[in-house]
Amino acid sequence: MAALGAPRCLWRCAAAPLGLPRAGRALAGSRGHGQDAGSEADKKESHATKPCFTDEAVQSLLYKMTGLDLQKIFRPLKQELKPPTYKLMTESELAEATRKAIQEAKELLKMSPVLSEREPIDDVLAEDRILEGTETAKYVFTDITYSTPHRERFIVVREPTGVLRKATWEERDRMIQVYFPREGRKLVPPPIFKDENLLTVFREDRHEDILNLCIAQFEPDSANYIRVHHRTYDDIDKHAKYHLLRSTRHFGGMVWYLVNRKKTDGLLIDMIQRNLMDDATCLVSLYHILHPDCQSAKAAKDQVLHGVDLIKVFMKTESNRIGYIELALQAYQEALASSAAL
Amino acid sequence: MRRRNRTTTAANGRVQPALAGSAQEALLGSDCSCCLSPASPPPPPATPAEPVAFDTESRFKEKPWEYLETEEYIERYGEKPVWFGYRRNHKGAIPPQKTSKTCIRGKKIAGNPCPVCRDQKLHLDYRNVKLLEQFICSHTGVTFHPTHTGVCMKQYKRLTQAIDKARDHGLLSFRIPWVTLQDEDYSNQHQAVAKTPPAPSLQSQAPWYSWYEWQQPPEKDIARIRKIYKNYLKEETGPA
Image 1 (spheres, chains in turn red, green):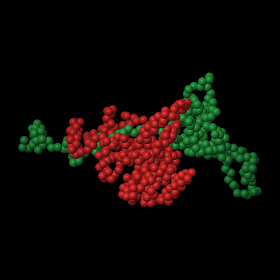
Image 2 (cartoon, chains in turn cyan, yellow):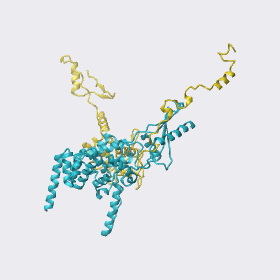
Image 3 (cartoon, chains in turn red, cyan):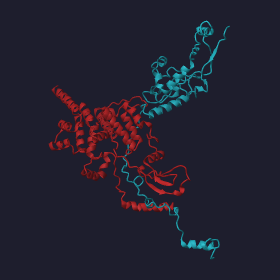
Image 4 (tube, one colour):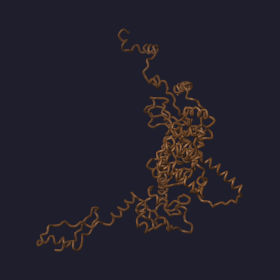
C-alpha cells in the first residue's frame, strides 16, 4: 500500500505541469449558465469558425423555431384522475395565469445538451502480479462520499490478475446508479433501446416518449444516448413527422443534427406548408451560421436578404428538392394573396 | 368362422376398436379364395380427437395474439374484456382483498377458475398486447387490482411481469417520468475520468515492485551467510 502511495504522489506532481488543464467549471449545459465562463472559449471558437450548440445566437434561433404551444406542453397526461377544479378569473388574473404558464413552459423547454461522445477510460493504476490466482472475481471500489459530483468520483476495479485499473464509463454509470439511484433510471438499460425495438416505437409515433426515456436512462455524452437520438431524428426526417417534436425540448437538438448534416429540405417544406415563415428564415440563417462557406450564405451576406427571398436563394443553391419547395412556396404565396384579397 | 374384433394400437399406445361395417367385410373378403384380390393393407385408423386440441394450444403458445382474432374468441367474449362478467365465489358481501392463490394445483382445477385459467388458449405473453391492455385502465394507465378482474394471484404475478416486459420492449405505451437534466460539468477534466499518465514502471516495462524479479543480494549478506554455513558449502569443502 505504501509502495502504491509513493508512485501516485509522483504522478500527481508529474500531472500538474504536464497540464491536465485545470480549466475550472466550463459548464457545457444549457444556454443560461454557459455564457460567463464560456464566452472567451466561444470567441476563440468563432475565430476558428466552429459555432457550438451553446452559442447565444444558435440557442436563440433554436428557441424561436421550437415554438411555444401551451396546449401541447400542458396537455392532459394519463394519470390518476381527480375531479376537475374550476376557477373564476378576471381578465387580468387570466393574463397573470397565462404569464406564469409561459414561464413554466420555458423551464420545460430547456434543451438537453448536445455533446460529443466521451473518450473511453482505460488507465491502469497499478499492477500487483502477486495477487494473481488469489481471487476469482473482480472487485469494484467506489468512493461514496455524498458531496462529490459524480464526474469526480473515483471508481477503480481490481481484476483477478492483480491489475488495478479505472472503471470504464459503463461500469461507472452502473456503480453510481447502485449507490446513488436516480429516478427513472434502471440499472440495466431496457431492451427498448435496441434498434429492432426502436422501430416498433417509431411506428406508434412515440418519438417524444423514447427521447424522454433516453434522457432519463443515459448520460448525455454516452454512445447509447447519441445513437438513440440520431436514430430518432433520422426516422422523423424520413417520414417528415417534425410536428411530433415541435414545442418539446428535443426540437432544438433535432434541428442542430439536421443542419449539421445538411438534411434541411424536409423540415423547410414542413415549415412552409404550416405557414411558419419566421421559422423557415431562422432555419436558413442557422444554416448560414453553421456553413458560412456555402454559396447562399455568401449571397445572403452580399445582398442582405430577408424573408422569402432568403429562402428562394437558399433553395436554388443548397437544397436537393427544389421542386417541392417551390410548390410549397407557391401555395403559401397564393394563400397569402387570397387572404389579403379577402 | 367369425373373426374376433381386431384391435389396433395407435402410436401413443392407446387401444382402439377396429373399423366396423364395410371395412371388416373387406378384411373378411380378402381371405376368401374366390376373389383373388391382392391383400390390401388395412386402412389407417381414424386420428383420435386429443392431439388436435394440443396442436391449437401450442400454436397459440407461439403466437398468442392469433387467438384474439378467431371466431371462437369473438363468440365467447365479443368486444368485452376477458374478465367481464366473471364473479368470484366467496362468503359474505365483501370479497377478500386477495384473490385465490392459484386455480390449478397439479392436475386439479378449482371449481370456479379465474378468467385467465378458465380459457386454456389465453396466454399471458409480452407480445399479445391486446390481451394485456384489457387488464390496464385506459384512462389512468393503472393495472386493475385482482379483486376487480378476478384473476388468481399466480396469474396476476405473471400478468404484471408480462406488462413490465412489454413496456420494456416498447410494445405497450405508458407515461414516461419527466427527468430534468441538472446543469452538470460535462468537461470530463477531473482526474477521476480524464487520462492519467501511466506509472513510469508501466511505461518502461519494468516490474511493478523491484522484488518481482531476481535481485542480486548485497555483498555483506552473502558474506555473512557464507560465514555461517561455511562448513556445508560445496565449493569450499576442498581447500576449507
